[in-house]
Length: 322
Image 1 (spheres, helix red, strand yellow):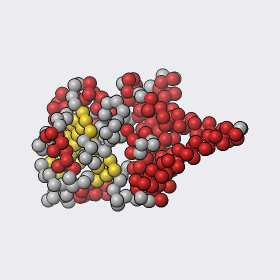
Image 2 (tube, rainbow, N blue to C red):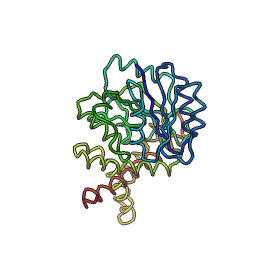
Image 3 (cartoon, rainbow, N blue to C red):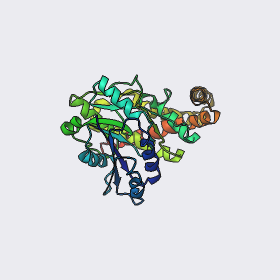
Image 4 (tube, rainbow, N blue to C red):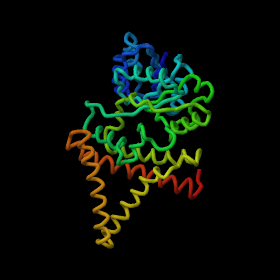
């Protein structure tokens, strides 16, 4: 089984250096790497070329189109039986391809996704953000979880599709705003089998600051409405949770100003909720600092996603704007 690893890249030379270095440690060696620079001003050509003696690596530069169409560019040039997509801010464990190969031999999948985790080298903020995106107490708990709700939709930071899927379904038709979910829904609807490979873990850095994390999650909230416009049945109750939390938080503030007894009750439940997050993160990360930061990152995740969701729900669903 031969893999083609496809990595879209935009102005992140340091990230691709770390990612390629992690790929030199793979125990399974039947793979190539395609790095597609998506119109970057700060390109990584020299860094990628420096790995030619360690990896079967190919560098391409194209005009900026966004990550979805950049992955398609890689699909068109890949030689593998499976195309594996990574985000440039991932680190790949040495046994990743071995785990994927063994799983695919034992359980046929036409497309797959894998979980993400925090690496020991991550900063406390990165570990807290990783917690917020994978915790059972936030909507992140449904990502890469064996007990996912409804159909499993691989996410493009860690996703694989067979050549057969590419030939019959094609690639991404959206370049951003939920392009990976839209793609996996079309793969499902074409009759292909998609599943989670539990041990195909990547270490996903995500964002390095809370301000960047807020912008990303606000975008994710808007992306969910974009998916709804293409596939209305894919909007589930769980996707409303961050919006409900956000509205509840605003209601709590109003109550504290206008009617403090009700505000006191709301404060109690908010405090209880974030205490659960704090102690769960402490047990997972073994760090009081990360546990404290996890409370902040979870709040940001819920409110940023909720505000993005509400914004585009009003604009695109209620007001019917394009």
